[in-house]
Length: 342
Image (cartoon, rainbow, N blue to C red):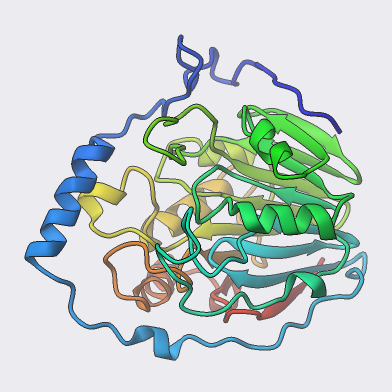
């Protein structure tokens, strides 16, 4: 598929995330200036260093049980490579989300946040990949080295990206690219992929802020429906996403990188927000007893101030308070594969 820009009107009318100068914005705003907030955060950290955190020692890397080359028609298999990278096997369809295999979430190979746990599944051990979902251009979600490696090893994969990100991905060697705006959907192979709103921003340098869009994705196949939230803060559209593209058998929602809250709440969910978002996704169709939430975006890179093991602990507590079935919250070990039968 070729790259193409679209301007479908959102269900609520208009294009509130587009700006007159061709960039993008959050319809719900970002209360804190990102530059001023970043400086304030770093200054506070210098004045009050974080206490020692040995939580990374408890992180596990286990052997994957990937379905090779594909899962059965009645299976949904999820393997956590790390951070926001999942191998999602929706029946016979193989999907990667925000693939990052590098040691650092950084434009440099020797500077920047380093992996606490190595990527759990080598690229050369992946099954044939049909679709790659790329939510935005931040370094912990779009890694140039990984994109080049996958473009070579998985040349026939179809990449689905938000508006204006296709050119950069193509420059890294990817051949088949579909660009989507929020609320658009497109048939991609044996799946229907929809681009969903997210509350975040984009930038890879100090000079390209919000020139490309950010998003989540909903994928529908005969095996079931999957939701990937991407990177996002809380916003009011989760219920509409669920109504339009659900019901979802599995939803991958970020639960980490949320402290300090005064700075991060506009762009990152915390575990309580994540459970609230999960419930909103199922508000229209009803929450099926076997609907699964996969907690992602934690335990791989230390990006923010919360202790390493706080996201899964707090996610379990929030899940329990919501009286949801314990077995339907998947907080995977690195490399772990879990299977849901449909």
